Image 1 (cartoon, helix red, strand yellow):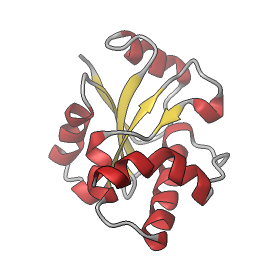
Image 2 (tube, rainbow, N blue to C red):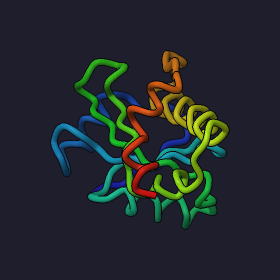
Image 3 (cartoon, helix red, strand yellow):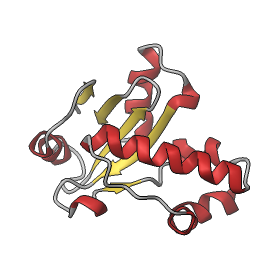
Image 4 (cartoon, rainbow, N blue to C red):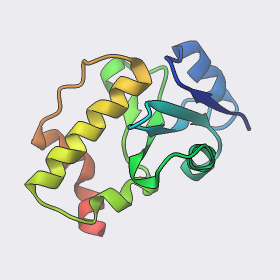
Length: 134
């Protein structure tokens, strides 16, 4: 399975090709939100995560996502990856605000857009199962 490292933008067509190698409609990706580098592909988020860690990324800068290239723009990114659980270990308003900034950074890295308006309600909906698990 191909894992592609991207430091600029990636096209929807490229994402669709990578998705065809594994899950057909979805491709896993890990973003280094500090370096703004993306590793896309592989069977598990851990596969892409390893590529970035081998390239001197720091674990705390990595965020795993699922990307659905065929869905409408605001529904393309799912932020529920097990590698994100470390971010959920501390709850509270300040932590949710930090996660909101991370979510916007991930969205910006994947589609080079600022259309993601994140509210605390959105965060609760997406991340509550992970906060409860930690």
